Amino acid sequence: MDERKIRILNAIIHSYLEIPIPVGSRKISKEYDLGVSSATIRNEMSDLEDLGYLNKPHTSAGRIPSDKAFRFFVEEFKKQGNPIAREEKIVISDGFKGVFYSTEDLFSQAAKILANISRYPAFVLAPRPLDRIVQKIDIFPLSSDTLLVLLVGDQGIVEKNQIRLTKDLAKDLDQEELAKLKYFLNKMLCGVDFSKLQSIHVQFSEDMAKYKDLLSTIISLAANLGNKVESIEVYSEGLGSILYLDEFQDLNKARLLLKFMENPENIVEAFPKETSLGKIHVQIGSENEEEILQDSSLVTASYALDVGREGQIGVIGPVRMNYPWIISLVNAISENLSRNLDG
Image 1 (cartoon, helix red, strand yellow):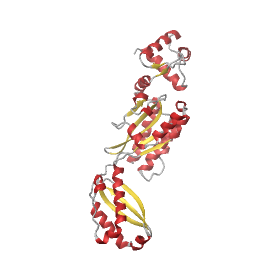
Image 2: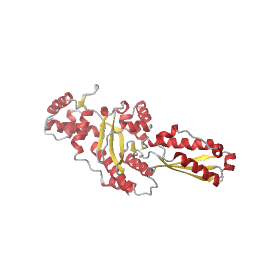
Image 3: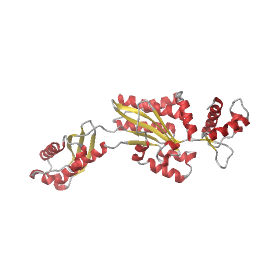
Image 4: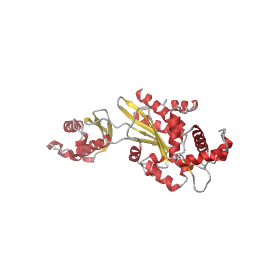
């Protein structure tokens, strides 16, 4: 594509980003100093339409950028970027200055910061846990009829569960009996692969038989932790923001997209499978495999939790978005999240 077509295409994209209405040659001629006549612009727009960069709505003489045009726009400007404003950098930095008691708190905060600044639905995908076997089981009494069960994986994952006891069981379960329970569980489950917990065969000794239901419950919790290890946690913020976007004023369309985004499995499936730390991924409109996302764009980046473990952060928004700015924003928050996780 020659330089003149590039300048005209960029002008059309910028005009459409400001106001989402079809763009005509007269508007481009009046508002952008391109040094060519309106007739020349009109001819070039016709060529750009033939090349697949512009679409012409049936009810308008103007054109709107196609997914192909936005892809060209992204590739042209991705190298240069569009640095976020100093005020936005301060908001991001301040947003990570609070006291966070867990990585989960940091993931939630990162999603919140991204949603608040971008005004788009934001998501953080936690790295997949590396735990494969049960390392330890601890049991503590919280009250006379409630136990706290801690399930610990070999790479540090910890699952906390509370179990209410029946009156009879609560009466019999003193410290000595609790120690026996804990010993029995650790002897039976420690070192067992999570994937085998569902099919594990338990033989209850005579003194453990009365605790059969309680032990079965704890074993089920451990098996469920195995399922959690195989899944990816998703933290989301700002899903309702799509209702304020021009592109989603069709309530049925907005409802379907909201329903899609509320399902964590859908988000995991929509995010890129191949990632690289520091690399931005942009999936524009029809580039998304999910049909429900083919009127939207997905901008994501990877962050580092520790060596060899990466997660992803990103937004879902309209195809008509300021890509250079949103790319810089997602990248800045990703870098801040990595630094805070490392610290």
